[in-house]
Image (cartoon, rainbow, N blue to C red):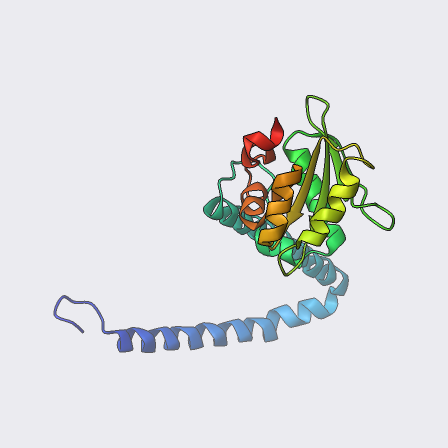
Length: 218
């Protein structure tokens, strides 16, 4: 014991072990003498009780996980309560189709209208389409690449976004960003690029139009 009357850590640990062993013995005696015979006589009730406990545990784990995900989104970005958000590692773990659907959900969250995922075979470069409140059409191509998107992909998108899809705002979303030639080409041809930093802000709750440069929206 220390001079101030508190117990030393070793003494505390020994006491905890003794108490734990005692409680374990009492629990085992109760299980062997009372609980187990009752379980054998009431198997159906026991099964229902176990099922209820499993469902309760799953619900609690899901709520804790959802709360943790939201807390991380708030720490990493500027999400507000009730705002649909994604973490970057969640986006990274998605399939390409799932990534497109996530971008569509973020557009819907921001208040865009008639949001549809249209990506697939023969999509001619359009993965998601939507309209803003002024009736202007957005066409998104979503690239979940592990490397930056190159100039060739941007050039291909430029060839279809406006002529084929009638995009007012052709937007490319690059999970890993874009190469310098791709950025320069997009600037010359009015292609809006949403690179990794912009995607992170968007996924964490900032509206898309607050992220994109004002001159790209004029």
